[in-house]
Amino acid sequence: MSALNRVPSLMTRAGTASALTLAVAGGSLVIPGVATEAAAIAPSTKALQIAASKKGSLYKYGAAGPKRFDCSGLTQYSFKKAGKSLPRTAAAQYNKTKHISAKSRRGGDLVFFHSGSNVYHVGIYAGKGKIWHSPKTGEVVKLQKIWTKSVWYGRVS
Image (cartoon, rainbow, N blue to C red; front, side):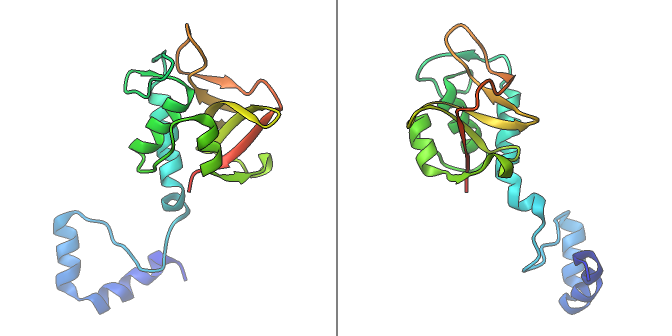
């Protein structure tokens, strides 16, 4: 039985006054124990949208927004606006995430570029092998194809 099919019986048990309050207040119905996948991935999806909204913002070393960013400043800013806390540097962000495989990656996951064990860059996975990132001095926040296989993936929880 889907959550929507259970709504009438829940409304009956909750009472007409609760249903009217919900309708008048313009709220949404929350059913305990029933969560949608969209709700579970909302912060990473929101962070991805925020990063994309910063397209064209100038790179500035050490900057964390709202108008200029370095790579980890963009990811930190985007997740903070989505309600999640991340440390300041790419390496520290890598250490804070749940490490996942390339096969498990999805939009909103972090992509960490590394040389050996040294993490030197981070972006937000946008799907189809692309990331939103703030590359380097003289460039701007942009969507770009992942250019190397020397990447690790992390999920913000």
